[in-house]
Image (cartoon, rainbow, N blue to C red):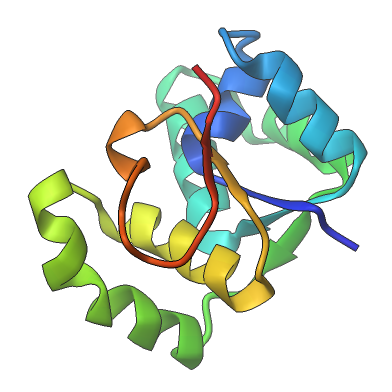
Length: 128
């Protein structure tokens, strides 16, 4: 059972041992979910950094994250939130994470300060 939803920025903070990594590590230890969209963002960043596929799996697979498919319900929620979140500059990946948090009724962890205070009915914890 997951206790938090991770944004790509939070998972990258953990992997890169950036500020806030300890909060993400605690969430992962307690069980964390991530949207398949956000996992793809993390894989893309690692791949752009020149890391081959096998080491990416070696870094991510042992974390035991609950990877949640981006289904039609989440797609609608993310799409409907576009007008509300556009002024804060949220991407599709951001909205995918927030949609999952709303769906699972869990707090989300992110390094993106622009999420704080969005009126979406979700607890957002900014890690730094």
